[in-house]
Length: 196
Image 1 (tube, one colour):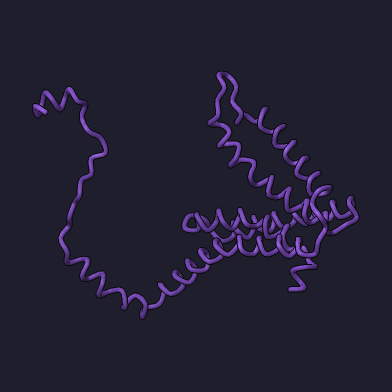
Image 2 (cartoon, one colour):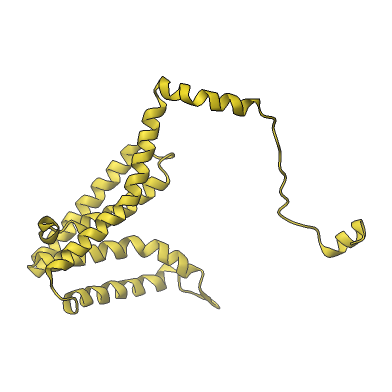
């Protein structure tokens, strides 16, 4: 646990979470090379920001927290802008970049100020952020790992032979079609056709 107190993993963990999560949801349509390239770009970008902030603040603690916050703000920009896009005030749309971007920069600046001035510098803070980052990565990691193991096991004949009896039973069953109507007729049409 001492390593979680001293080393700032959280900027990297928070940075790669959106990439792993997106890949976990779309792994059937994407090649793993895309994931590796994205992880490399995020890691290099996080390292550059982390080092530049370390040189500016002359403190690893502040640099790590501000890097994590900046990464979070960066990756939440588009999802929250899409939510704001549905908020209309006559001709004014909050989701337009010309309105949303300045608000987002203000959120970045105010959040950074609060981290620097209001957040107490404690050893447990780094550990907490590291643990939050690790827990956040568990879900996409489990999803990706289970899919990789499933693909790997499906290539072996002994796994396919275990599935064949089930497939044969399913193949012998009749086809059943269940029609679900997602709409109904207008009340005047129902009255005219069915006397209802």
